[in-house]
Image (cartoon, rainbow, N blue to C red; front, top):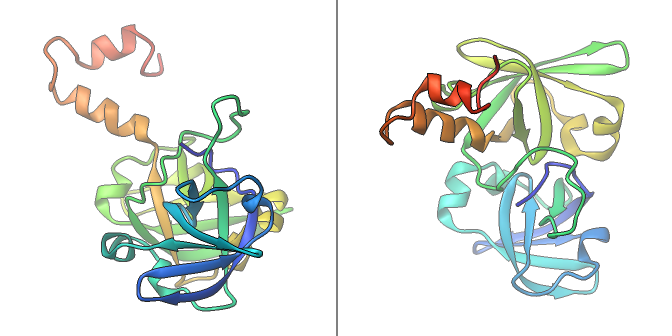
Length: 209
């Protein structure tokens, strides 16, 4: 489990034969073989470490669903270690299971922040709601607006300084993970369990009143 609060930006050293090697600093502290690290939103297992780098094996399914296959040496990636049991929870529930990708439509300045609009497929947009959460390249973000084909998030100064989102421009692809709670609510709403419906969910605090 992750929070979507990026710890540092790693630098791609190589991507060969399904193995991604990344230079990093903070996330390597205490990291052992077999540990999980969120790389641009994808939960991946550390298979090797050495010096200031670590390696992870990237499966074909991950390459199909994410932007990792398009990375080149020298590019940055957002990194976050798995949340420890006694850790402080600061973002939202992020599993590191990328649902798909979206494409940046526009990036517009607004005071000290930037509004980034992202076009996304219908199977992702259906879980997107205004003021809800979404993870973009592993970054926990609040949705400020949405319609049937896209959503908008506000990138504050801290996010711009500490993640790769500051480099995003129209046409760029971002990994997206929707809020897992939305998926469970949909499953329950569809009547997979007798007696569970919108009235039940509202009564027990799962829906806004």
